[in-house]
Amino acid sequence: MSKLERKQDRAPVPSEWEYAPAPEARDLVKLRERYGHFVGGEWLEPRETYMTIDPADEQPLAEIGQATPAEVDLAIGAAREAFENGWSDVSASERAKYLFRIARILQERSREFAVLESLNGGKPIRESRDVDLPLAAAHFFYYAGWADKLEYAFPNRSPRPIGVAGQIIPWNFPLLMLAWKIAPALATGNTVVLKPAETTPLSALLFCDVLRQAELPPGVVNIITGDGHTGAELVKHPGVDKIAFTGSTEVGKAIQRELAGTGKRLTLELGGKAANVIFDDAALDQAVEGIVNGIYFNQGHVCCAGSRLLVQESISDPLIGKLKRRLATLRVGDPLDKNTNVGAINSPQQLDKIKELVASGEEEGAEIYQPPCRLPEKGYWFAPTVFTNVAQSYRIAQEEIFGPVLSVLTFRTPDEAVEKANNTPYGLSAGVWTEKGSRILAMSQRLRAGVIWANTYNRFDPSSPFGGYRESGFGREGGRHGLEPYLEFE
Ligand code: ADP
Image 1 (spheres, helix red, strand yellow):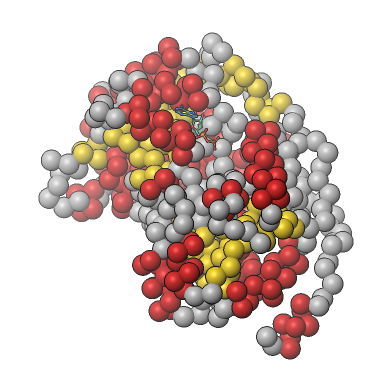
Image 2: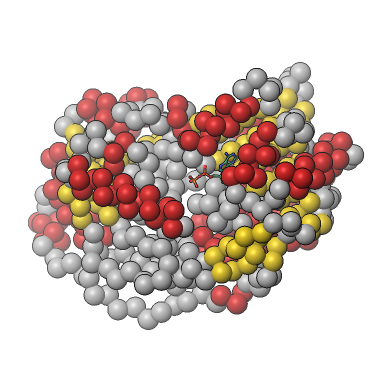
């Protein structure tokens, strides 16, 4: 270790940073008291409703429709009609035009969307502003570019749209997941019924405004809200030709069972328990930033989060020391404050799940570390947490926590790292930190994960396919690969 590193390791923990509040303007968002379902280009008055809240202070935000089977049926009918009476015949360049318009409007209204996303989901405004919104717009731009090039993407295969796509998305990246689902579906000529997660419906509902602004023909995109019951109705409805689902492995399995033998197409993007592997030759300070971004980004509500840190034994002590000091500088609190790094947990149910798994880690014998931080009294919060002395059999090393909780394991050789990294039923993502390019290539061949990052983590790009295998699901979103699940070939 260099002299400088040794000196830095003894530096006092800066636990008392004073920041003036830097709140983003909440009044950029005008909420209605009540939202219905967006069906056939019109707002349908909902028969049943529930209240959506701000997880940072538990205040109600708006009344939201809980779609009944009859309302699901209306939405699917509108999507079918739009598909058969026009949209499937619209020229490819015309479809691209709508996607370009949507992308540009999202850019123009990005601040408003970012505030809404943080308000309803609890994620820091820095993330919704700098990650969710730019990536959502980029996704529409990217697939706008593909819309009139499908014959080139799949030469001699005569690609055709499938029909009506039912799309169910989770609460961790509400608008970005909407973009991942809707952009490729429209680019390939399908129509859509999308259901956002019950805790985060507002950005999808504001997106209906964008659809109107873009003058997308009525019925091409329909948005219905509600909980898992609504999702289940959408899945089993005979009028849907394809289901695209992102969410928990448990629900993904139930959907797969439901659709077995129906001939409906299915893609599933499910859970993960990714290994972030740090070799002894890695640039440690950069690795610490990557570890933090890997697990504390979006409060760890990320299916590809680097939730298992595998550290080469010889650097374990200095790395964990640096990580703990870095954790002390993370600011937990108001999602709408521009200084906030870690926002609110999305729901009380999710908070209970995190607490339960953290308690199991302590009971099983892992050592817990949480930096000193004051959590707000109202709302749902959990301090950034690191567990060391974790055995592979512990629940915190096996189960997806979906919270700001890192489990640290050590290894001595690359073989051991691979064996431990692959010791999971999931296979969504992984990270490798090393100075050696050859080692990156060797590791990425052996790690069983759909996405592998090298000397970075949680980086996304619309041109790069994303998805997993085994219990993380199947099918790819993003890139040329992301077109295929929405096409039929002759
Ligand atoms: P999480 O456990 O992370 O909340 P879920 O898989 O329960 O994830 O939720 C992801 C999405 O799936 C949400 O939109 C939710 O409403 C929906 N959903 C939940 N249960 C079902 C189901 N049985 N069928 C279809 N969709 C469902």
